[in-house]
Amino acid sequence: MKPRELAAHKAARKVLGGAPAFGPLKKGKLPKPFNQMGGARFQSTGLLKLSDDHSALFISRDGETLADASFFGYLTCGLSRGALGIILEFHWHPSHKGIHL
Image 1 (cartoon, rainbow, N blue to C red):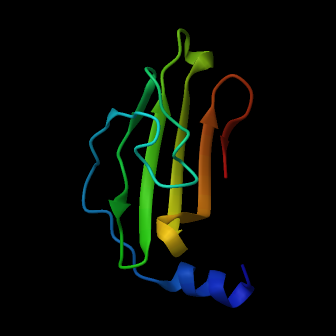
Image 2: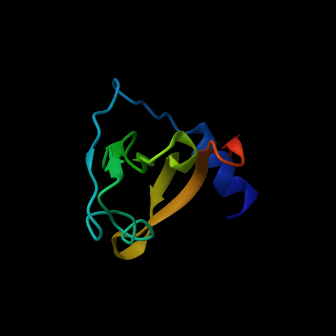
């Protein structure tokens, strides 16, 4: 992505209208590149529309212990053929890295 394109994404008005609800995430239910994520321990908000061009997605994974759990947040934009481009990626892995972007 070119610097001007990134600047346009950053400047665009994006609104999340409240706390999203989480539900089970099954493989293949989200567009690429998230279509392979899913399973019994995964919960997702699904795609949350933030603007005409931007969406957010939050995914959590339970673990048998807290160290096995994780949380992901993504800011995306639409690409051709229904795929999503990732603009920002937020991860939390309590076992080894903590919060990182």
